Amino acid sequence: MEENKLSLAEIHAELLEQLRDITGVCKRHGIEYNMMCGSLLGTVRHKGFIPWDDDIDLLMTREAFTRFREIYPRECDRRFELTYLNTWTPRVMNRDPAKALAFTDLFILDPVPPEGFRRKWWFFRLHTLQGMLKRDVDYSRFGLKQKILLFGTHVLGLPFSTAWKTRRYEAISTEVKGGNDLCMSNGAFELMTHIWHPDQFAEKETALFEGQEVLIPRRWDEVLTILFGPDYMTPPPESERVAKHLDL
Image (cartoon, rainbow, N blue to C red; front, side, top):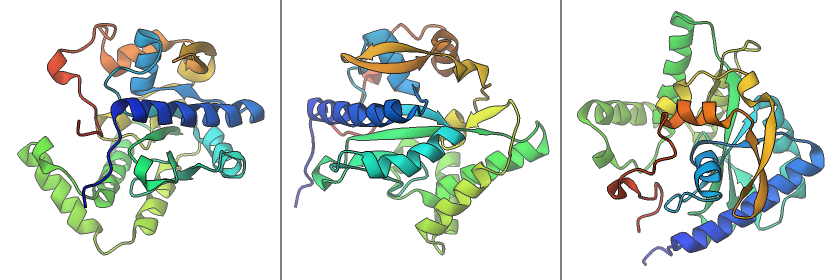
Protein backbone atom coordinates (compact mmCIF):
# COMPACT_ATOMS: atom_id res chain seq x y z
CA MET A 1 0.00 0.00 0.00
CA GLU A 2 1.36 3.43 -0.95
CA GLU A 3 2.24 5.56 2.06
CA ASN A 4 0.03 8.59 2.64
CA LYS A 5 1.90 11.76 1.77
CA LEU A 6 1.18 15.31 2.76
CA SER A 7 1.71 18.23 0.43
CA LEU A 8 4.10 20.95 1.54
CA ALA A 9 1.13 23.28 2.07
CA GLU A 10 -0.51 20.68 4.33
CA ILE A 11 2.74 20.24 6.27
CA HIS A 12 3.02 24.00 6.79
CA ALA A 13 -0.57 24.18 8.05
CA GLU A 14 0.05 21.33 10.51
CA LEU A 15 3.34 22.86 11.70
CA LEU A 16 1.64 26.18 12.42
CA GLU A 17 -0.85 24.34 14.65
CA GLN A 18 2.05 22.69 16.50
CA LEU A 19 3.86 26.01 16.85
CA ARG A 20 0.76 27.70 18.25
CA ASP A 21 0.33 24.91 20.79
CA ILE A 22 4.00 24.83 21.87
CA THR A 23 4.39 28.58 22.21
CA GLY A 24 1.11 28.80 24.10
CA VAL A 25 2.33 26.34 26.74
CA CYS A 26 5.70 28.11 26.92
CA LYS A 27 4.08 31.51 27.37
CA ARG A 28 1.76 30.31 30.14
CA HIS A 29 4.64 28.85 32.13
CA GLY A 30 7.44 31.30 31.34
CA ILE A 31 9.48 28.68 29.46
CA GLU A 32 12.02 30.42 27.26
CA TYR A 33 12.68 29.25 23.72
CA ASN A 34 13.62 30.81 20.43
CA MET A 35 13.29 30.00 16.75
CA MET A 36 16.48 28.39 15.46
CA CYS A 37 18.20 27.15 12.30
CA GLY A 38 15.94 27.25 9.23
CA SER A 39 12.99 28.52 11.25
CA LEU A 40 15.00 31.49 12.53
CA LEU A 41 16.19 32.22 9.00
CA GLY A 42 12.62 31.94 7.75
CA THR A 43 11.39 34.33 10.43
CA VAL A 44 13.97 36.96 9.49
CA ARG A 45 14.09 36.50 5.70
CA HIS A 46 10.53 35.43 4.86
CA LYS A 47 8.49 36.42 7.94
CA GLY A 48 7.50 32.75 8.08
CA PHE A 49 8.50 29.50 6.47
CA ILE A 50 11.35 29.29 4.03
CA PRO A 51 9.05 28.29 1.14
CA TRP A 52 10.65 24.86 0.71
CA ASP A 53 11.24 24.11 4.40
CA ASP A 54 9.25 21.25 5.91
CA ASP A 55 9.80 21.39 9.67
CA ILE A 56 10.13 23.85 12.56
CA ASP A 57 13.26 24.18 14.70
CA LEU A 58 13.14 25.56 18.23
CA LEU A 59 15.99 26.01 20.73
CA MET A 60 15.85 25.69 24.52
CA THR A 61 18.39 25.52 27.28
CA ARG A 62 18.55 22.18 29.10
CA GLU A 63 16.81 23.77 32.10
CA ALA A 64 13.97 25.11 29.93
CA PHE A 65 13.57 21.82 28.08
CA THR A 66 13.43 19.86 31.34
CA ARG A 67 10.47 22.02 32.42
CA PHE A 68 8.87 21.79 28.99
CA ARG A 69 9.20 17.99 28.97
CA GLU A 70 7.37 17.82 32.29
CA ILE A 71 4.60 20.32 31.52
CA TYR A 72 3.85 19.97 27.81
CA PRO A 73 2.47 16.40 27.82
CA ARG A 74 -0.07 17.45 30.48
CA GLU A 75 -1.22 20.63 28.77
CA CYS A 76 -0.77 20.11 25.06
CA ASP A 77 -3.54 19.78 22.52
CA ARG A 78 -4.48 16.09 22.58
CA ARG A 79 -3.69 15.86 18.87
CA PHE A 80 0.00 16.26 19.67
CA GLU A 81 2.67 14.44 21.63
CA LEU A 82 6.30 14.98 22.63
CA THR A 83 8.30 11.99 21.48
CA TYR A 84 11.82 10.86 20.62
CA LEU A 85 10.47 8.39 18.06
CA ASN A 86 13.54 6.81 16.41
CA THR A 87 15.92 9.73 16.86
CA TRP A 88 17.95 11.49 19.53
CA THR A 89 16.06 14.75 18.96
CA PRO A 90 12.80 15.32 20.88
CA ARG A 91 9.95 16.20 18.55
CA VAL A 92 6.40 17.42 18.80
CA MET A 93 4.27 15.46 16.35
CA ASN A 94 0.66 14.73 15.55
CA ARG A 95 -0.54 11.42 16.97
CA ASP A 96 -2.15 10.68 13.60
CA PRO A 97 0.39 8.60 11.59
CA ALA A 98 -0.92 10.19 8.39
CA LYS A 99 0.57 13.49 9.59
CA ALA A 100 3.91 12.08 10.76
CA LEU A 101 5.85 14.02 8.11
CA ALA A 102 5.12 17.27 9.96
CA PHE A 103 7.15 17.71 13.15
CA THR A 104 8.79 20.34 15.32
CA ASP A 105 12.36 19.61 16.40
CA LEU A 106 13.54 20.82 19.81
CA PHE A 107 17.27 21.53 19.98
CA ILE A 108 18.88 21.69 23.41
CA LEU A 109 21.82 23.80 24.59
CA ASP A 110 24.23 21.92 26.87
CA PRO A 111 27.67 22.85 28.24
CA VAL A 112 30.59 21.17 26.51
CA PRO A 113 33.87 19.99 28.09
CA PRO A 114 36.97 22.21 28.00
CA GLU A 115 38.87 22.34 24.71
CA GLY A 116 41.20 19.44 24.05
CA PHE A 117 40.87 15.68 24.27
CA ARG A 118 37.85 15.70 26.61
CA ARG A 119 35.82 17.81 24.19
CA LYS A 120 36.80 15.71 21.19
CA TRP A 121 35.96 12.47 23.05
CA TRP A 122 32.60 13.92 24.12
CA PHE A 123 31.65 14.82 20.55
CA PHE A 124 32.93 11.47 19.28
CA ARG A 125 30.67 9.54 21.64
CA LEU A 126 27.61 11.58 20.69
CA HIS A 127 28.30 11.24 16.97
CA THR A 128 28.78 7.49 17.42
CA LEU A 129 25.44 7.20 19.19
CA GLN A 130 23.78 9.20 16.42
CA GLY A 131 25.01 6.60 13.93
CA MET A 132 23.85 3.81 16.23
CA LEU A 133 20.37 5.35 16.41
CA LYS A 134 19.91 5.99 12.70
CA ARG A 135 17.48 3.83 10.75
CA ASP A 136 16.62 3.62 7.05
CA VAL A 137 19.64 5.69 6.03
CA ASP A 138 19.70 7.02 2.46
CA TYR A 139 23.35 6.24 1.77
CA SER A 140 23.20 7.91 -1.65
CA ARG A 141 23.40 11.29 0.12
CA PHE A 142 26.88 10.62 1.53
CA GLY A 143 30.46 10.17 0.37
CA LEU A 144 32.38 6.92 0.78
CA LYS A 145 33.95 7.80 4.14
CA GLN A 146 30.61 8.86 5.61
CA LYS A 147 28.93 5.73 4.23
CA ILE A 148 31.49 3.53 5.97
CA LEU A 149 31.12 5.42 9.27
CA LEU A 150 27.33 5.36 9.10
CA PHE A 151 27.18 1.65 8.30
CA GLY A 152 29.77 0.80 10.96
CA THR A 153 27.99 2.70 13.72
CA HIS A 154 24.65 1.28 12.59
CA VAL A 155 25.98 -2.27 12.97
CA LEU A 156 27.52 -1.32 16.32
CA GLY A 157 24.13 -0.19 17.56
CA LEU A 158 22.14 -3.27 16.52
CA PRO A 159 22.55 -5.21 19.82
CA PHE A 160 21.18 -2.28 21.87
CA SER A 161 17.60 -1.11 22.22
CA THR A 162 16.56 2.35 21.05
CA ALA A 163 15.59 3.20 24.63
CA TRP A 164 19.07 2.31 25.92
CA LYS A 165 20.80 4.31 23.20
CA THR A 166 18.55 7.32 23.82
CA ARG A 167 19.27 7.17 27.57
CA ARG A 168 23.01 6.99 26.90
CA TYR A 169 22.75 9.94 24.55
CA GLU A 170 21.08 12.10 27.19
CA ALA A 171 23.49 10.95 29.90
CA ILE A 172 26.51 11.99 27.84
CA SER A 173 24.85 15.24 26.73
CA THR A 174 24.36 16.29 30.35
CA GLU A 175 27.75 15.16 31.74
CA VAL A 176 29.15 18.69 31.92
CA LYS A 177 27.40 20.68 34.63
CA GLY A 178 28.53 24.23 33.90
CA GLY A 179 30.53 26.58 31.71
CA ASN A 180 30.04 29.24 29.07
CA ASP A 181 30.86 27.06 26.06
CA LEU A 182 27.61 25.50 24.86
CA CYS A 183 26.45 23.47 21.90
CA MET A 184 23.23 22.04 20.53
CA SER A 185 24.02 18.61 21.89
CA ASN A 186 21.32 16.96 19.80
CA GLY A 187 22.18 18.68 16.54
CA ALA A 188 23.26 16.44 13.68
CA PHE A 189 26.75 16.40 12.16
CA GLU A 190 28.44 19.84 12.10
CA LEU A 191 25.38 21.54 13.59
CA MET A 192 26.34 20.01 16.93
CA THR A 193 29.91 21.32 16.81
CA HIS A 194 29.05 25.04 16.68
CA ILE A 195 30.11 26.54 20.01
CA TRP A 196 27.66 29.05 21.46
CA HIS A 197 27.66 31.29 24.53
CA PRO A 198 24.78 32.08 26.90
CA ASP A 199 24.70 35.79 26.04
CA GLN A 200 23.92 35.01 22.39
CA PHE A 201 20.47 33.74 23.42
CA ALA A 202 19.86 35.43 26.78
CA GLU A 203 17.92 38.39 25.35
CA LYS A 204 14.87 37.72 23.18
CA GLU A 205 12.64 39.81 20.99
CA THR A 206 9.31 39.07 19.37
CA ALA A 207 8.80 38.59 15.65
CA LEU A 208 6.05 37.34 13.38
CA PHE A 209 6.13 33.89 11.81
CA GLU A 210 3.24 33.47 9.36
CA GLY A 211 1.31 35.95 11.49
CA GLN A 212 2.08 34.18 14.78
CA GLU A 213 4.14 35.95 17.44
CA VAL A 214 7.34 34.04 18.25
CA LEU A 215 10.59 34.65 20.13
CA ILE A 216 13.94 35.07 18.42
CA PRO A 217 17.34 35.94 19.92
CA ARG A 218 18.02 39.67 19.93
CA ARG A 219 21.41 38.86 18.43
CA TRP A 220 19.77 37.03 15.52
CA ASP A 221 22.15 38.51 12.94
CA GLU A 222 25.14 37.03 14.77
CA VAL A 223 23.42 33.66 15.17
CA LEU A 224 22.37 33.46 11.51
CA THR A 225 25.83 34.49 10.32
CA ILE A 226 27.37 31.62 12.29
CA LEU A 227 24.81 29.14 10.95
CA PHE A 228 24.54 30.22 7.33
CA GLY A 229 27.32 32.71 6.60
CA PRO A 230 27.19 36.48 6.03
CA ASP A 231 25.00 36.18 2.89
CA TYR A 232 22.15 34.45 4.68
CA MET A 233 19.59 36.93 3.30
CA THR A 234 20.32 35.70 -0.24
CA PRO A 235 18.31 32.55 -1.06
CA PRO A 236 20.28 29.60 -2.48
CA PRO A 237 20.15 28.56 -6.16
CA GLU A 238 16.83 27.05 -7.24
CA SER A 239 18.43 23.61 -7.50
CA GLU A 240 19.06 23.68 -3.73
CA ARG A 241 15.57 24.79 -2.76
CA VAL A 242 14.35 21.37 -1.70
CA ALA A 243 12.50 20.02 1.33
CA LYS A 244 14.71 18.01 3.71
CA HIS A 245 12.20 15.36 4.74
CA LEU A 246 9.59 15.42 2.01
CA ASP A 247 9.98 13.71 -1.34
CA LEU A 248 8.02 16.08 -3.55
